[in-house]
Length: 361
Image (cartoon, rainbow, N blue to C red; front, side, top):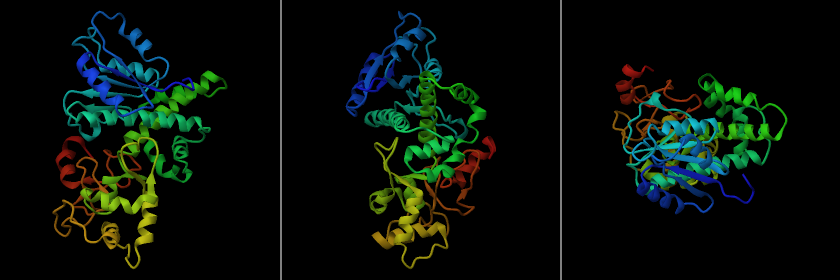
């Protein structure tokens, strides 16, 4: 990528009106990224060759419809685009025409999906957030040598080497499921500008996906505003009153452009500093007691279980989006549905009991 050029988002759709609307919405949200479009047509030649031209140069993120056969060449699907992107270690995102109810084990770490049923502005915001996030990862990697393990490199992107051990479990198993990535990384372990560039592309691809699709989606060392409220046992609707207490714990890094995020270790430090006479014997109630000591009594969250009544918490269920606590009748501890390292995640008991017979635990 040339120093003066802007990174490019490539948007692909064979329906021109929808393509133009998405291009307009994305352009309205960013001045630092260029937007390029491709509307495949049946008269196109080899779509793979056309994609190679469209995705050349400064393209850093690709967005594609899953079905490109209405006006595009026969057989051209988003899965083909995904394969061509993976060959180039180019991050990409599908958009679909309907909301997809996805079960826990269907998630792919190297895949993003956005529903066309989403609000138009929210859809564009997510595309820009992802594209900016990957560009931020690339720039941070370029600013200093990426050394050590993958978790060391990700912690280095944050400028917080101390987090490496907390991040390491998120990377477990990637080599088994995606051995080609390890082979390609190994092939760049030689001097030379081409190998250095290829290695940087693979590192940015892997680190960006792990961060966006695992670390920020399944909270452990980093919490978003809803997860922060769950950690403190409060309702997410109270995020304005709660999050302001934790400004010193803010995470400002890749993929945080439109959302608030917080380092959990710094959240703990803020809680301890505010705790005064409050004891931390019960982690399910400690955060709420400390927060209420600062902002006054808060309304309960939506849990109606006996002995909770919306006042206990400490954990967040990634499948229901609700605050849960550590009691066995409320939630289930780490399962194969949750990445290792996501220590603030537990599966809400009702959800687990409904899906475990089909999916296992």
